[in-house]
Length: 73
Image 1 (tube, rainbow, N blue to C red):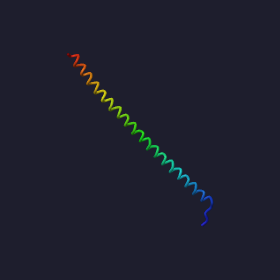
Image 2: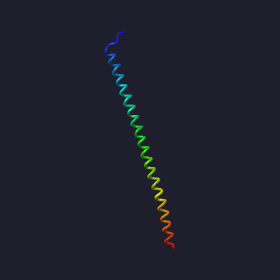
Image 3: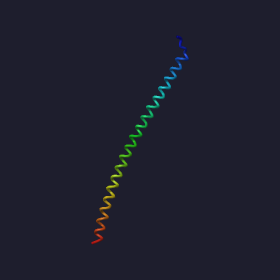
């Protein structure tokens, strides 16, 4: 069985194409994982701000309630 140089060249080209495909796939997966981590961090910051806002609103309600009591006296 004789293999021609074109046969070997096509195998090399196919292997290079598969390698490029795998590299792009891995890079895309890594990029998506990093984006997910970034979104999780943003959500934690947002939730922290939301909790602080709720505490401020509760404090504000208590202050208005006290002021209303003073006005009634």
